[in-house]
Length: 230
Image (cartoon, rainbow, N blue to C red; front, side):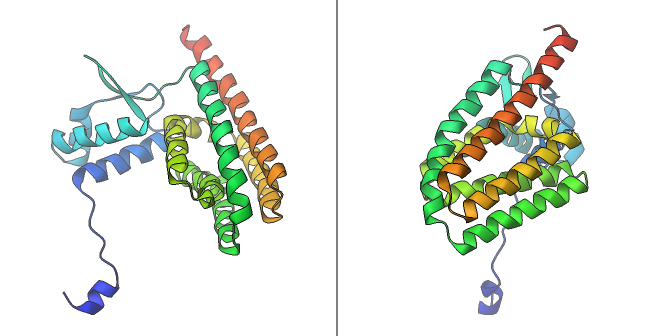
């Protein structure tokens, strides 16, 4: 291979298991696979034209991320949280993300601000276009653009795992236009505080932002439980 070719950067094509995992993540984020939905290995293998081996490995990968769970003798299911688990996850996030943001904001640069703003604009654009998959990804980029400048890789990794475990619920939350509008307003206020380097205000706004999401998801989960009689 010529040096010029190498200079362009080599991109290894995804393995079959990575391709399957990517498509399943997209289906979960897009709401095609709702919380509690069973994922049948044979059906997935037929759908993507692969053997069961990469499907099984992809499912293990998603299980490790917390997006799906395995039940003995039953199989794999999209992660389904009850209200108490949801509150617990967000409570832990409150503690850890406040620490990450408190450390990150004083270290942020103009380039960091630009990354936050780019994610914010992508979120707003996807919201207007009713593109839930793109919106969910952009929303995640916005929040991690605030967290990652803390330069504490282990802390960021733990926070990422907590986000993974609630990913199936973001598609449920973002379906409602009023939720998306609130996210846009919250993000704008958070962005202003961050760029002004008002650390305490940014932490307060982020806590309120998470609390609003939890309250809405609590209502949605409670409604689902009433409808199913569980």
